[in-house]
Amino acid sequence: MKKLFKLILNTIPRPLLIRLSYLARPIISLALRGKTYTDPIDGKSFSKFLPYGYENQRDNVLSPSTLSLERHRLLWLYLKNETDFFTTKAKVLHFAPEQAFYQRFRKLKNLDYTTTDLNSPLANVKADICNLPFDKDQYDIIFCNHVLEHIPDDTKAMQELFRVLKPGGMAILQIPQDLNREKTFEDDSITDPKERAKIFGQYDHVRVYGRDYFEKLRSIGFKVDEVDYTNILTPEEVTKYCLAKGEILPVCYKP
Image (cartoon, rainbow, N blue to C red; front, side):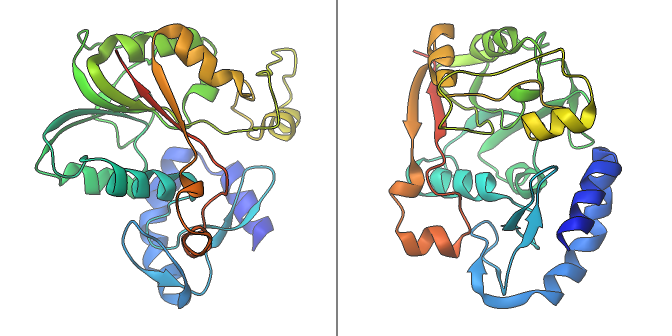
């Protein structure tokens, strides 16, 4: 199973993979019905979740129903339990919208919801994150999750995110984390896709962020809360929802 999923992830282009996943979800969900693990996004339970990972496959992380990963379920729980995201009117900008969220966020009557990306079929505005076609101080909330590690000039991208966020607005900017690494690592001389996948975790990542990521966001102007939400949940909830213990949510605000 793990080898099959690794092969699929590394050979099928992501836009096509997104389309094919809509066909596969009902079949897989039916096959894995159970009561051991629950996806909090839709409330469905399963005997196990699926493996996932471009290079190092992680067991029991991909929800059969919403296709959410640990980071998606963590963000959902944080938004649901700790914010008024689902009830208060807000103008939202969502980069590279995830399937687990896209339709659900679109249906929320309280949101003025815009999606953007250069390649995603779920984006309704095709845009370069380093040169956004949006006015300054335009959005109350920005989601930009697992995007910045793909961007060569992440400083410019962060500056653009800060520019279009309203004063007092919130941006959640998740990235793949190596909390044991103090300094961010990048090396453009590594060009072999397999070697890049081995070192950076995915062939199209350009860096591995360290804990200095949060300080870089602060240097752009953001106020950053490093939220370890798995430490607020019970151990039973962390296991039940298949979360990554210790994952930090970078919750950023524009003063």
